[in-house]
Amino acid sequence: MDEAVKKYLNELKELGIEYQILEHPQLISVEKVQEYLGYRMDDAGATLLMKTDDKFVAIIKRGDTKLDNEKIKKYLGVKNLRMATEEEFEKITHVPSGAATVFIKGVPIYLDKKILEKEYINAGSGSLLITLRYKTDDFKKIPGIKIVDFTKIETDKEDLGKVIKGGKRILSGITPSGDGSLHIGNYLGAVRQFKELAKNNECFLFVADIHALTTVQSREELQKNIEILIINELALLGELSNITFFRQSDVPMHTELQSILNNVTPLGLIKRAHAYKDKLQKGLTEEEMNMGLFCYPILMAADILIYKPDIVPVGQDQKQHLEITRDIAENFNKTYRKKVFPLPESHIPKEVAVIMGTDGKRKMSKSLGNIISIFDDEAIIKKQVMSTYTDPTRKHAIDPGHIEGNMVFTYLDFFGKKKRVEELKSLYRVGKVGDVEVKNFLLKTLIKYFAPARERYQELKSNPQKVRKILMEGSERAREVASTTMVEVREAVGLTNKYSFFEY
Ligand code: TYM
Image (cartoon, rainbow, N blue to C red; front, side, top):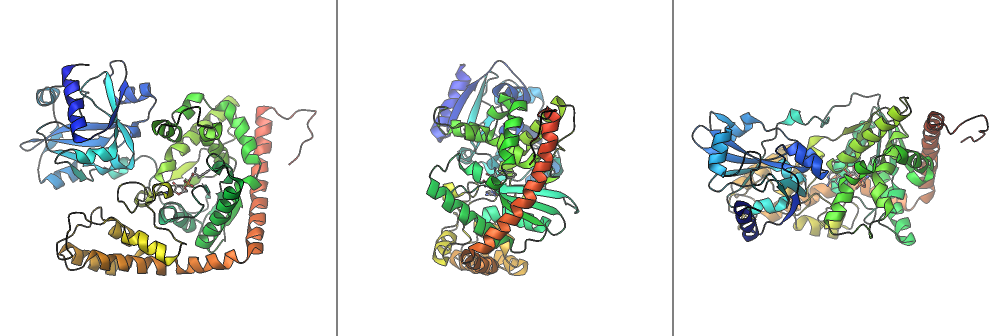
């Protein structure tokens, strides 16, 4: 390892920035490095050195995002902006082109916030032979770093935010992990858009109970989680017209299809899945990991493909699973020379792709304890709202406050009345309203917003017959569609012949 890299690693240590060293042959392009290491472009970060009117700036961006030069110019208040030439780059950074370290001494540094949607990212070390895997949150420790939004929207080629006109088949699922209860992140990221889509599309929504077996291995706990999730979802959905609601385990064809798809799924494809890699990253050994967890994306592909949906609305964290599903479908169609599976598209509206948690740092997730729940006692929701991250630079209610990154306002933007929220933002900016007051307003807003769902929740809890009926009808319809696909699949792969008699 050369001296410059050692020096950089020392600097990282001093700043408290953790990293993991990934070695590879000499590779210049980020694409090649990621491919070699088995990662995708959205797991990569790159620091771009750019020249403005009169100085250089460095911008850290994610491998799959394009930057919007107009946004950057406006933010920096400059007229000109271009990439530094190779000569300029090497003169300023003292490292070869293609090996930029994440930050460059003496150059103002900006972090495009898309990076923070990933927990870890691979980026430069100063050497073409070493890539470092950084925890993105640690980037905030880089002296003087500014978090900005420079992402060019339309370059997100995965139909983010696409409008769905109607007449399509929509499918999605939720796993009863955690304790089965939903939080506002699940609501905004999944249930709300599903409800919207159900207005003029044919929808299938299921409780992915077999998926939960990967982590929930207590019979009582699993049963309880499933019950809670079913009632949570039904209470939030309210109206079920156009929606087939069912339990995955009531439609055994999902696992049958998974067994068949296993055979057209390359091991490498699954090894590249985030779910598996993140578990390894977190220290779980291959001995401790079960095959259910590892093969999870194949079951998910079966869940989806068996209904031949056009669109799968999910949060950003499921995007890779959708890509894997498309790969598996293509492999199947190619192997059996028959287009059995149309390729489904993900639907990830940008504004709800990742709902951040009350800590303002990570995706809202039950396991991180940064949630606002929907059906818990009001006292619990109050506690969650009161501990929500606001503006750490604001010490007193009379200090001017920041709205950007302030989670209370982020949530209010989703749930509050626009006019009142805008009024509060103006007051907050000039220090005329305190955090507690704004939080109380958020609490009141949430309780009011979810009051009808909370009422339905109580009603459903006391009426198990009604819930059973919904599930029975849902699974009947789901089995009808699933068995039609399975007949096609059995035909395509050659499981039928003159000695066949099996019928669903
Ligand atoms: P699950 O149960 O983890 O999450 C359910 C849905 O909620 C979304 N979500 C979020 N969206 C935005 N911000 C957040 N903080 C947030 N937290 C959760 C998730 O993206 C997801 O859409 N593997 C799936 C379940 C599944 C499935 C399927 C989904 C199994 N088979 C087939 C679609 C199609 C999962 O575990 O999601």
